[in-house]
Image (tube, rainbow, N blue to C red; front, side, top):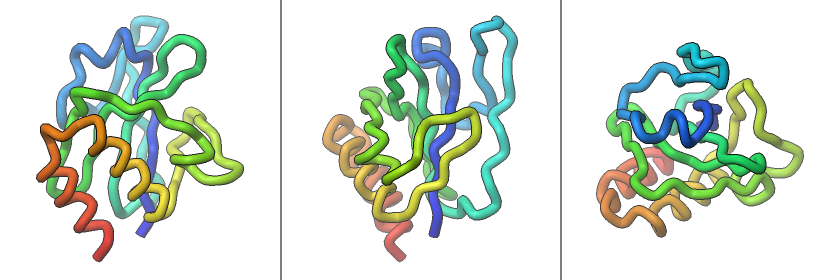
Length: 128
């Protein structure tokens, strides 16, 4: 099973209006941009992230086939810890393995206990 991380615009502009099911974001040009399509190999969880000034990227939304959660407390993504060696943030979706996805979910859970049951369900589904 493969999972993915996708860019979803600037945090200050987009996070206040983010909702489950969002299909795009407002760019720095003021136009709405559709999210890029997920690569065919991404068949597990999908995580959207937004950028804050200084090239800081925060996971803001987590989705699988049964749940779509906007995080009340986004987490700072660290490339080495959350993406694996040699991967970086880019306009194209980044594919990560289950080991990385479980680490991200653990960090999300630590800051978002209000969605513990939903996150536990997502984690259980990717481990099958």
